[in-house]
Length: 111
Length: 116
Image (cartoon, rainbow over all chains, first blue to last red; front, side):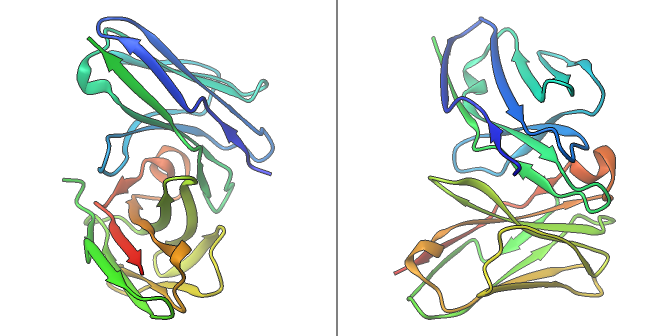
């Protein structure tokens, strides 16, 4: 199977830090991606991890542990505009690049 | 604007009917993906094409079919429509098929299908 698990919803306060976790089945793993999707809009790419460790990009960072089948997205200095759904996606394709998405975590940022 | 164009944006039809959704990828992207998004199931991978050939298949129903044409645009055909097919259908494109190039997808705005 290719189950990808994320919390359904999270709430955080403006200016705070929030960590969104993602676990996945490791068999066939070939890279992990995070996407942001605002309500009624298309998903947009945030980050890519293929090796263990932390990738930092401004206020957003993403971490990967391949042996544990675990990733997290860290959002710092939260802003109201960060209220969105965050989708974890895993490339299970090998040569064919089948990108499978989790159901997403709906983040609500409160003042 | 991602550069990916999908038409139509909205479509309302009846059960048993057939519809065609169209997608034009970003200029230079060879890979096209189709996803279905419904409220209770998130983004479901349907099918992927690369340079005109089918590369990967997800949970695409037999009633659904797709193709990518020589000019790289793609069409998703949905037939014998059922109420449960109502969803947002996204097309996405990418530069390649490996590594970051294969997973950094650029999504169109989607085609919202309502089956009555």
